[in-house]
Length: 175
Ligand code: NI
Image (cartoon, rainbow, N blue to C red; front, side):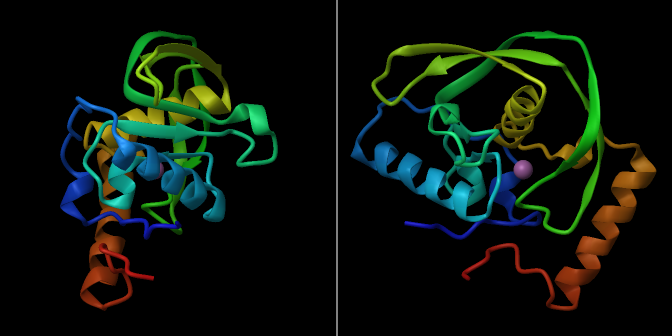
């Protein structure tokens, strides 16, 4: 089931998501829906709070569904190591229409558990490293915008706030 993606302005995206204590059928269904929603968008990553569920779960697929073995689901992810730097244009399904260059590590190692509760340790480089960092930001209540200079961030936030006032930006999307 494709779920609506919540947009910048919804408070679920402004606070850290909660750790998952038990993986039940509810979490399994949530992950299935997150994957479907990510592919439909299309995007290369999605955090659970982007579909309105404040749980520490993320899915990533740098091929966005093109290659079956690229899909990674991590519950309670944490970054355990980073290395290098990359500087690329980055956008966000919760901030549609805006993008900016953001510096990220070139390689990132993530640790968490899979849907069976088994430990997973994954190393990502390039786009996958970027997606890991981007989704970790969401789970920590942050946006890629928080990595921009104050002036760049302020310009984007003002434009979004104006769209919210004008009724052109609905944080709790129902579509
Ligand atoms: Ni995002």
